[in-house]
Amino acid sequence: MTTRSESEPVSTAAPVAGGPRWYRGRILVAGPFAALAPPSVIGVLSLFVLLLGGGRQSAVAGLIGTVISAPGLLLVGAPIADSSAYPMAILLSAVFWVVMGFIAAWRATRRPIAGWPDFWREYVFLWLATAIGAGIGIVIAAARIGGALL
Image 1 (cartoon, rainbow, N blue to C red):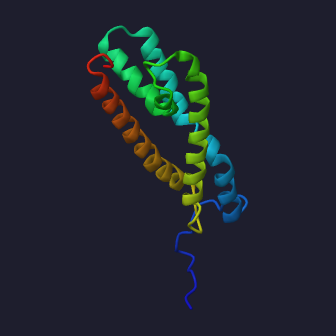
Image 2: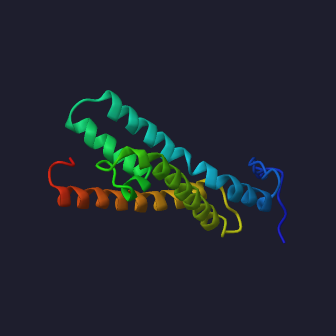
Image 3: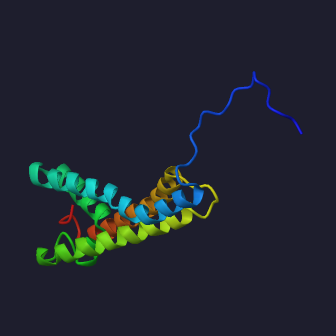
């Protein structure tokens, strides 16, 4: 067995505060709520684009951003359906993102030593799948309705 000599550098990385299990538990508890942040930011920015922008480009960007951040809007028929169902669709989308955050946290903490970068990596894969699905939904709606949607 070798011993460390005095000339070898000592690792300066700080240990995990409460240990790996505590940190994994923290990711499992806080991850679902952290998953709400990116869609919320995208949704608010898309809403500003819709409200402040004028023209086709801002409408398309706002529609894509809002549907990606709140995929439940597609379930109620946004942007063509009555807007009275939008709050329920946004609430269902928030529940959806919390579930996605839980799945990402669970997948990230399967490894013995998990960190927030692991959580965000798993979450980005789920977010991309959702964004692609929402984009496909918009394309299908545009094809069915014609040029009136976009």
